[in-house]
Length: 153
Image 1 (cartoon, helix red, strand yellow):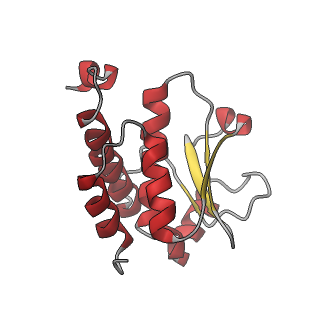
Image 2: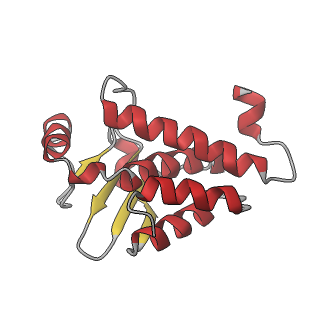
């Protein structure tokens, strides 16, 4: 296993034929040696975030806002996966920043949370680029054109 999980992930992506984000989540969990659980959480529908990661002792828990759009779900999960693989949760400064931005999140032990639109934040920018690249990998292996492609090119 590579010492850099991001490099190991993209190396695996080159050889894979992923057609959805869940296959990428499975691969990332294998690389990290720790489960990544994705859950839709109703409470996020009224929060200023689309998703966040809680890194717990035995798993990474990716919580996302419920959405009927598989494309939006895939992008949010990809973004959060970028945070996990880039190990953003290990940054104490980032954890403190999120607590300041969203102080009233429910009682989860949140080490890292995503605040969409704050792209002056290097972590968010890096995760957004990761999700973009992952979307391209998945799109390349689909039999039909993506609705995402029709909207964004």
